[in-house]
Amino acid sequence: MSRTRTAALAALAGIALITTGCSTVGAPGGEEESAPSATAEGPFTIGISNGFIGSEYRTQMIDDIEEAAAEYQDEGTLEDLVLENADVDVNGQIQQIRNLINSGVDAIIVDPNSESALDAVFQEATDQGILVFAIDQAVTTESVYNVGIDQGLWAETSAEWLTEQVGEDASIVAVNGISGHPANEARWGAAEAVFEDAGVEVLTTADGGWDQATGQQAMSDLLSTYGDIDGVWTQDGMALGVLQAIIAADRVDEIVTTGETRNGFMRLWSEQSDDFESIGVTNPPGTGATALHIAMEMLAGGELAEDALTDSHNIVLDLEEPVTNENFDEAWAAVQDQPDTYVSDSILSREDVQAFFQ
Image 1 (cartoon, rainbow, N blue to C red):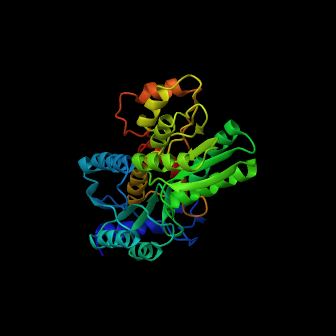
Image 2 (image 1 turned 90 degrees about the vertical axis):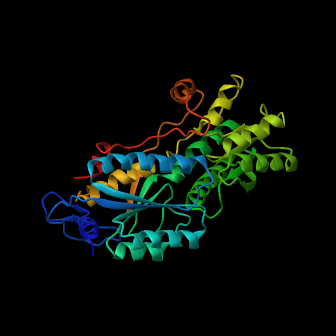
């Protein structure tokens, strides 16, 4: 076993020794271990597994990770960042992760294609002392650290806003991401519950693939099929296409739609009349870079604080304040010089992530 792999195993074993040394916070899965006897210095190798590249969000996510990694590489504490970055199915992502294991990485950051289908390969990695972090979408594997926002809360925020706009007994449609993906399922499950509780009828749902053009076509089809639509709930990556379809159908004054904090949508939002209202709830691509900072701290022997984890393996990041008409001008002014593909972002710095550690 390599020196850095041994260090990773030590960091995993010593996840959260309480300051007295008399009690411990369990590693994922609830097992209690002792803290490492010394701090490892590296250099370490971190692998990235991204199984979906069909959105600007994922491109920005990888860029954020690479930028964060460069600082450690300049310092000499990170030897290499190994990227497995391609459109693959679950089996393809399993192979991505096995490639990273075979490359001798000390930690893996993965944006997973499934909530549970990667369990076995995750176990292969953690059994070898490799730290594994799931970002953007949570997995059920208890030996994996989930790092990201609460996707259910993300969805509830915009769903509740939409119900307030359309009122009880309204009829809406939903343009979702990709069925089966963990974030999509968590989001739609939470949003659907809000609509049911509020007495809002969901006429149907359609997949937009987190893609603007696909989302626009899906919405155009829905407009042709359903004459009476009061609102649309959609996810990031499709909101611009959805709004473009509504504008093309000359129904922007009839149909309320949720939005996103991506510049293309926000630019179109800024061009509408003062009567137009929407909401954007940020899902930051920078979560991957935040996870890299956490991984590097743990590899170096850092111990997570007792209250850093929920449900034994989740590091939940706070949501940014949603963008609505009330704060739109300020939010738009901060990003309007960025390209339309830019997603409003937030990354916890190396200093920020210290709040998760003892």
